[in-house]
Image (cartoon, rainbow, N blue to C red):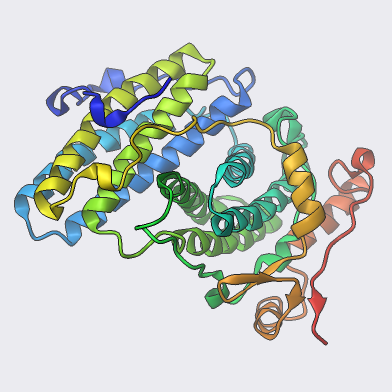
Length: 400
């Protein structure tokens, strides 16, 4: 059924503020919930955080006091939404357990977007990045078994494979090679805008999470692994944010953010099996419809354009969390040895890449390799390799 959010009316803004009792939602049960329910919660939290921070940045660049007041009013309810969404996560879950769920989000969300993306250049960007998130999941799974003596399958429940991807040590590239070419806002499919904004927000959330939780561990290898992968998430945010056309006006970006929130709440509402969580997606959708209406009015008054000029006339197919095993295995077979050069991709270890590797690693094994060595010392194997069989470690061809 088609759904045009521009034709819908949501809850009036003055009725959206909730009291403490309404904000104090009960969390999901980590042992009984659908893994993709947890993934939807994590993904939506990242979207809400991006919406809040974008609104703050816009306000800091806006000289119009009335617009700043309007942004503040909408942003307050966005902040309440973010608390409700993020507080659905259970406090009994360890940081590592949540980390593995974060990486499951990164793998299956990015893989789905890559499969659905209509622009080949953007598809390649998502395919490149997902093989790195895939390996991060694997490294954290090894750390999880070492520290907590539990299996990552208890979290992902077989929906996402836990196996090596592009080796994490090869993810460290020169910063200039993380900047991609942006889409053209005048010609791009509106769906591509939603994809870019969604993956950028998800990766940004992961970057922020690792920056903050990494020092909380006492085990040196855990602290070091979070530091290494956290730096790679910085590369990923650069990679994905550079896909967005920097020529988009503040008003265009504002309506894109609000439209994307409506799209994702609608998507998650359509597939959510947990009645309690589903009711939150539905409530927040009805709030976001009003936020979108307000943003569209601001665009008309301040940008002199109709929002229909930049937004899709109706929602595309709902964004879906689902297994992507065959797709990811195909990418592993064909793209695992890629790196970036400028705004493109190569299979050769070019000079800038080699220099960055030498400068960062300094003849030492990075934490992502040492965690594997320590796991082998402890268990006599790598995680799951006793059943999966040995996976060859890919490497980039040297020009020498």
